[in-house]
Image 1 (spheres, rainbow, N blue to C red):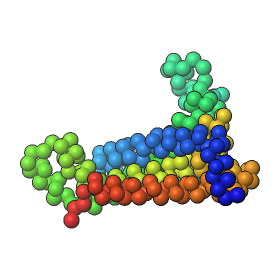
Image 2 (cartoon, rainbow, N blue to C red):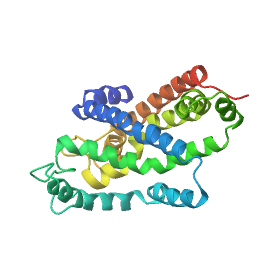
Image 3 (cartoon, rainbow, N blue to C red):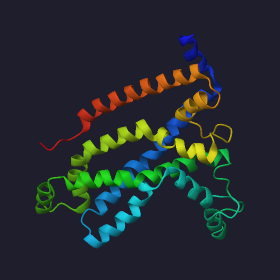
Image 4 (cartoon, helix red, strand yellow):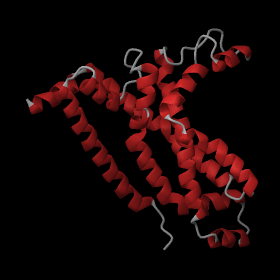
Length: 247
């Protein structure tokens, strides 16, 4: 019966949709966990103490908020009936009819991806800020003495020195993006509409705790662990080739 569970799992129509959505979540979260936090960390690296306190408060608050509370806030903001975002879009004449951010299959997965990414910005910024603080500033001073501009310092000095951290965050985001979105899927969409927001983790939970398909749930869990192990191994090898270590 064990092998039959795997065969059944990959023939289920929900599985292909869940795998596609998992890929969308993974790629969609990367700008929020890599590009935006990296830009914020670099831009605020030399700001004053008072300004740093303010920016940390603005950036890190989402990180410490409970996911269920975050879901409730965004559900209110994105509500098609009187939600603040729909009111703003209508007032600016960007849309004529309210958008069903969680009820429209074309919008739901992107809405959940955005909320997941927004929640991660603070955590990723904290990691990059800590990495910047630990860099040897003599490289930056040497580049300035050679009359390197701001963008040249960022591109040729800071980014190579940050490459181990960038690879680490890329691996973390790839492995856990779909898992991080689980709470928002469960609270806001329950995998719908029409399975447009379900992913491999939500599918695993559905089989195990809603339909009680223990065989399919166990098979899905093994697939997740095996796939994650291969991804982690690939990132480790890639990191050894692309990362620059200041020894």
